[in-house]
Length: 69
Image 1 (cartoon, rainbow, N blue to C red):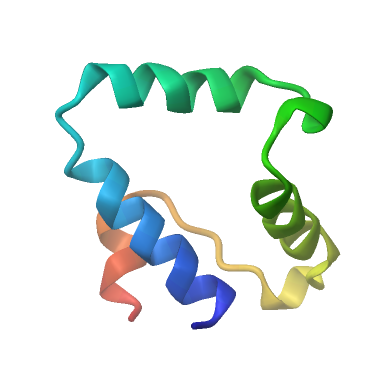
Image 2 (cartoon, rainbow, N blue to C red):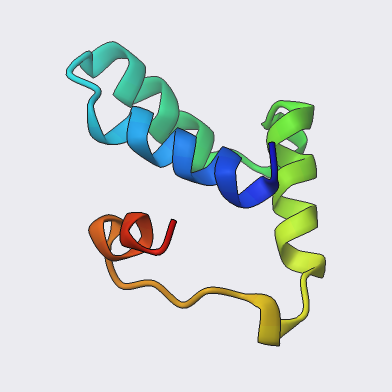
């Protein structure tokens, strides 16, 4: 699974969440420092950061991003 596919999968999962406990945990991750994040998320962020700008996808909404599949 490519990193783009992984991101889309996570976005799909997040958009269907109704469990506020999980959402609270995710907000906690978002507000954490890199030292507090799980290794897999830090690796994904580093991969995204190392990607050349011309390969980045500028997206304004999840719906627009999902249409690109």
